[in-house]
Image (cartoon, rainbow, N blue to C red; front, side):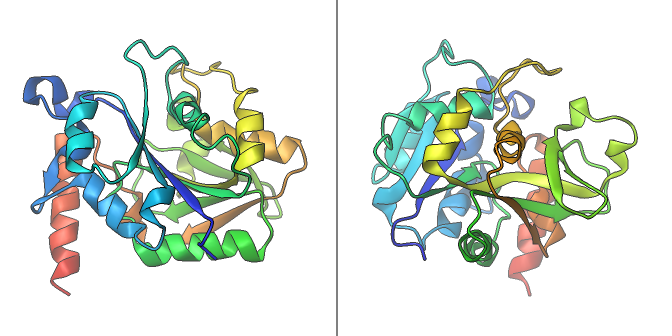
Length: 253
């Protein structure tokens, strides 16, 4: 199932709410229980060959590249010439995987709570259903500032709407988008060209790609994680502390 699978980890962000400039450390290198955040993400995909893993880096990229020299890196330029947001960041990998036509697992580099078994199940769901895109979602009772999975009356996927762009009614939805997904490579890069940044953040959202797939009659699915903690990313000091507590609690079982 994973022999030809490639993975792209988005780890170029600065992490303003983590005071990264003051600390002079990229957020993905912040340590939790003695390990960099990025190491947890890499550990979760050790079922994928290292040569098939690409890490997108930007802010203080040398620090990440020095610690993980065995991986391939796509470098986001300092001027963000392709724009801002996850949809822009992944475009920096295009030259590396231009001739590749199979599936890509795209991961957020600041999500250390994602379990390997969840990602394997996500990839299996994608393959078994012959999907062109399969999103990883997660239900959580908390009201979080994250994108929501929007479904029709028959519970079929329609789109992902980021929190800033949600209506008050949509903000009551408790099925969140984790930001992690599997895509058909060729169709992904085809549709990346059609992204726009007409949203409240002025960014190119990778999360708009499933909607573009849906409009083009590509097959889009959602795999829902059974672990509500997998939704948490390390974007602030408070979230770092929460993730640390959850990791310690998990390892104590």
